[in-house]
Length: 286
Figure 1: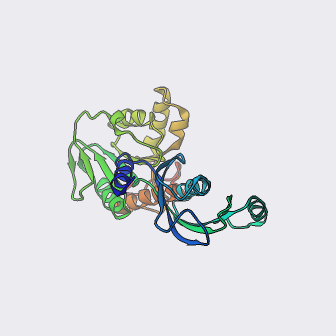
Figure 2: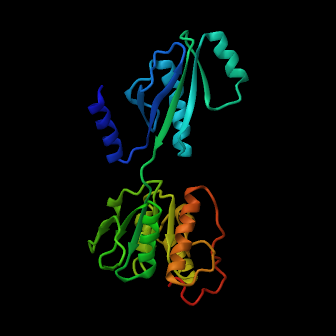
Figure 3: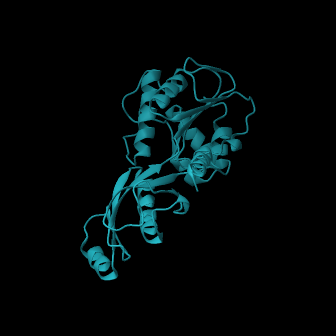
């Protein structure tokens, strides 16, 4: 496969929002079938889709390193030692480094392989109710500044910020969204379509679901969703009122509290949340 095939494989994965890893030989010592510039494209499930590193032994070892890179999102250089069986077994036992791999082959050399993960751009879905909404507008601004792909579903928005995608269909079928587990969704339907929207979202498994609402409406919505048969597991993950407890008052501050909560969730962190028994601030979520 040549460069044209390589470009086609990578372009196809990006177009379909599939995670993958590009592994490239950057340096060798001694005898090695793989040479600098040899590369492979490894899918999210560990399958080699393109290229070669010089043999199945180093490629299987790099496939494991690729899975780790996808979990952490961090590129890394892995040293692959090509040794006989005895040396490989002994080195594996005493090695303390996760960045060194010893494989059983008689080449006798070493390859340094740069393992670079590609993760699809994170998406932020904002579901509005039409009209002027300063929180929605600020979330677009913050989301784009943080390199989210911002998708707004709002039939009649009054925005000064421009999302990446704007869906203005009045009766848009939310099941078409294809929300995945790396996505974040914020619902700004102001009580008018809360049940309809949240019930539709319960069919997906987004990483983050937030409802802009007062504390009283948040409780009422949770009880109403359960009565409508929405699984309690989904109801339990809804952040409502959404946002980290930073004392937010203005629409921009509320948006900042929401985007902070999303970023923390994406990194596996937990920020203090707004509590149900607190009195809302003057310009709080309505």
